[in-house]
Image 1: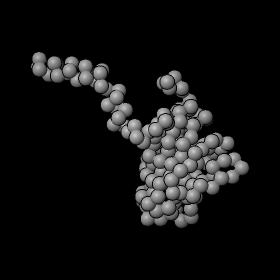
Image 2: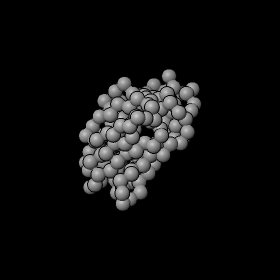
Image 3: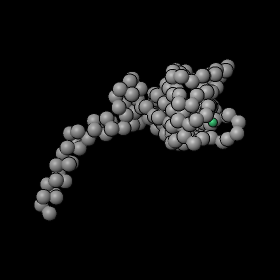
Image 4: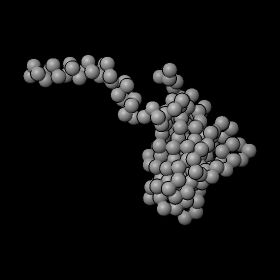
Length: 150
Ligand SMILES: [Cu+2]
């Protein structure tokens, strides 16, 4: 019993000293993170976005990595989340822009697209693939609270 208590205290001490850095390193590798607040990877597999719910915060700069692991071409259509929003696009997809900004990105089979942007609006915003023959969608949930941002 005493040993367990000591072990517990030790774990707590270690968490206090190393906890935040361990957690940070495990969830978002620094090499992937760059200057962004957060990096999120969405996989496309079997005609699905995984995860299909992407949670972000207002004012948080995100690097959204879209990986098409399917055998067919897919599109990422952000609906109205990125209207009149500055989006930096890289990777091997084909972005299409309209008057309102980024309209959609085509992502070839095995391809990867990276979008860097800062969400300025809170709420739920659907995203989907608009290619014919299947339904594929997801939702951005943007938290309006900025209190936990540094
Ligand atoms: Cu698709």
